[in-house]
Amino acid sequence: MQTTHVASAAGVAKRTSVRYTILLMVFIITTFNYADRATLSVTGSAMRGEFGFDAIKMGYIFSAFSWAYVLSQLPAGWLLDRFGARRVYAASIFFWSLFTLLQSAVGLAGSAAAAVAALFVLRFAMGAAESPAFPANAKVVASWFPTAERGTASAIFNSAQYFAAVIFTPLMAWITHKFGWHYVYVVMGIAGLLLALTWLKVMKNPADHPRVNRAELDHIEQGGGVINAPKKAAAGDAPRATSWSLVRQLLSNRMLVGVYLAQYCINVLTYFFLTWFPIYLVQARGMTILQAGLIASLPAICGFTGGVLGGVLSDSLIRRGHSLTVARKVPIVGGMLLSSCIIGCNYVSTDWIVVALMSLAFFGKGIGALGWAVVADTSPREAIGLSGSIFNMFGNIAGIVTPIVIGYLVAQSGGSFNGALVFVGVNALLTVFSYLVIVKDIKRVELRQPVAQ
Image (cartoon, rainbow, N blue to C red; front, side, top):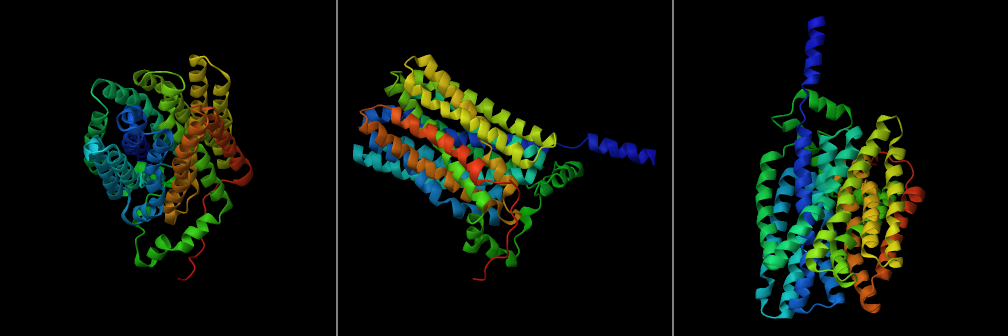
C-alpha cells in the first residue's frame, strides 16, 4: 500500500505542463493578431500624406476591418465548433497574414482613389480572416485550463493586445521612419505566414496531445476543462450548432447579453488605442511618428501589466473561496472605473500628464478585460465557439463605430480630440453599469433543446 501511495505521489509530482506551451503559442499569435490590426494606425500618417486621406475617410478605412470581422463572427463560431480550433485557426492566421502582406502594394493601384479602395478591400478581407481568432482562443482556454486557472490564462492572451503595442508599435514606427510604410506590411505579413505553420505543428486537443500525461488531463478535466468538447460531431448534434434557435437562446439569456454589451463598451477603448491614439499624439500633441510610436508603448506596458494582474487577482479570489461572480466582477468593475480617467486628458496641457492619465486608463482597462474568461466560464459546453463568436461580434461592433464616430468628432471640432476622449470614457462607465445592473450571477448556461426546424 505504501509503495502504491509513493508511486501515486510521484505521478502527481511529474504532472506535465503542456497547457502552458499552448498558452504561450496563443499569446504569440494574439500579439501578431493585434499588431497586424494596428499597422494602419502606425503607417496612417505617412499614408495620409501620400494619398490625401481626410479624417472622415481615414475613419471609414479604419472601420473596414471591423465590418468584415463582425459579419464573419457567426460563421467563424460554426466553423470552430464543427472543425476545431487547430485547423480553423491555422487557416485564419495564413489568410490574415497574406492580406497584410498585400497591403504593401496598394500604392501600385495607380491613383489615390484606387489606392484608398484597395486598402479598404484588403482591410475588409483581413477582418474576415481574423474573425475566428478570439473565439478560438476562448475555445482553447476552455479545453486546456481548469476554471481556477482560466482567468489568468484568458488575461494573458487578452493582454497580448498591449504587448503587441509595446513591441510592434515602436518597431513599425521605426520601419516607417527608416524604410517607408510599405515595409511594415511586408515584415508583418511574412512573419504571420510562418506562424501559421508553427501553429499546426504545436497545437493538438488535450486528449490527443502526445506530450500530455494522464495527471495533467485529470487536473484539467476535474477542474472544469472541457477536454472532450471537440469530439461532439455526431449527426444528431449538427442542428444544435447551426440552428438559429441556438443563437436565440444565447441572446435571450440576460447574463450573456450583459456580458456581450460590456464587451462592446470595453472595445471602444481598445479600438481608440488601435486606430486613433498614435494619430492623436501626432496631431493633437505635436509629436513625430517616431515619438508617437515610442510614447504609445507606455500605456501599452501599463495595459499589459494590468491585464495579467486582473487575471491573477480574479483566480486568487476563487482560490480563497469567493464565488465566480465576485471573482470576475471585482476586477472588471474596479478596472473600468479607473479607465474613465481618460477624460481627464481634456483638462491638462502637459504631455507627460496626458501620457500618465492614458497609462492609468489602460492599466485599468487591462485589469477589467476579463470578458474572455467570463465567456469560457459561462458558454454552453455544446457551443463555446458560437457563444464566443457572438461575444466577439458585439465587442467588435465597437471597431466599426469607434473610428467613424471619432473621425466625425475630430473633423467637426476642427481637429480637437476632446469629444473623442469623453466618448471613450463614457463607454468605460457603461461597462460598469452592465456588470452591476444587467449581469447577475456568473455561471455556465445550460441549453434548452433546440426548437424543431
